[in-house]
Image 1 (cartoon, one colour):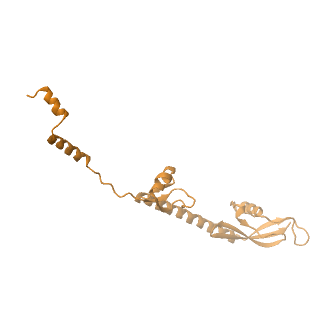
Image 2 (cartoon, helix red, strand yellow; image 1 turned 120 degrees about the horizontal axis):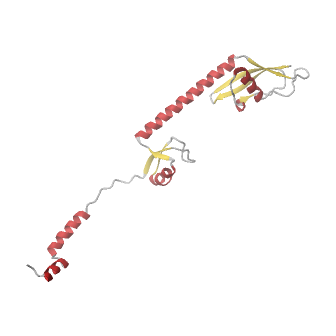
Image 3 (tube, helix red, strand yellow; image 1 turned 90 degrees about the horizontal axis):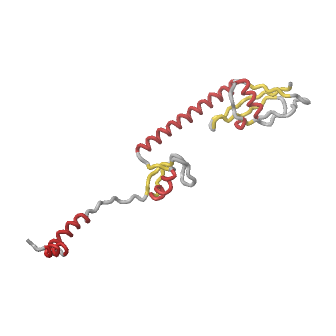
Length: 190
């Protein structure tokens, strides 16, 4: 058996062959390198809000990874483009298109009602000859439509020509960006 002084000497100063074994085992564990993929510089995202100078809600964009990570993601203005998100956005787009189509069809139906109804009669106080006191405004047309058809129409959508005499006139009601109804007005003196 070795003396205690020898044991302490060997543990304090290991032999060269044992030190090689120790460093080789250390090296083996320290040399394990996890392969990293190439860092993506750009990300495909879908905007969840309108962003000035970038795009509108629902647009798909290719943006820098840092811009997405540091600005868009924390503020909740964009999500990464994944097949699930893309499918969800397409379903939402289809629902919006169906709603727009329904509103347009309703507007066309209401326009047909206005055009087949005939002329709305608007009484006014008469003056000399064909002149009337005051004029017929968009609010007057809206009130007549409300009383006769029970339909609410915004007065900002009604375009009335300048009416200062009795007679027949045509007013336009913009029910939808693509649908304009023409309403005949018969202005007479009381």
